[in-house]
Image 1 (cartoon, rainbow, N blue to C red):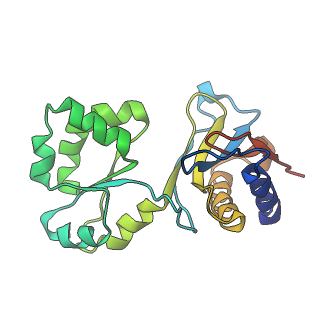
Image 2 (image 1 turned 120 degrees about the vertical axis):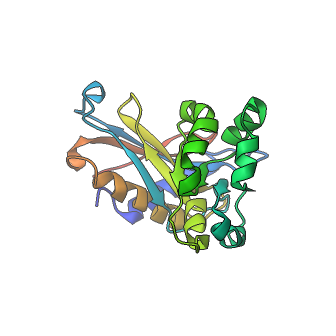
Length: 218
């Protein structure tokens, strides 16, 4: 393990303290930042795009758009996604740039029945791509409630052109030990994709508007 849960909890507690996180009039997200060394991003030596289901459900769940097949509709409703669209509703969005942009901005995950994937790519893709979002295929099973619920507590670990990743792990009103468990899940996913812990330069925890707190690796 890159860093112990105790050290993560200690750092998270400090990041959430009034000293580093002055009170705001909204619920802030908590993010884990990992920077890397000795990797050439231009050569593609480090590419991360991992979906991680957080073990402790965030108090501010992710917004999910679902376009199920007809057979999956009732199961999808049970998960209470932020937006539920029939294939016909998706088709009606064609050319509605403002409505599509609003969907892309306000939602995190786009779960699409496999027979609607091509349509979703054509209609939603131009708005999702620039925002680093993408349509994700639903399984073929008619029972998809748990699948959708998993995405409501999932986060995306990704790198772009800089040797770092900044990942949502929960909200400031959650317990430090729960946030530490979520951070640990993200770090495990990263550890499985890198050459070894030696390429990790630093780890930080911060809220949206707070100061970053470094987690000591040793």
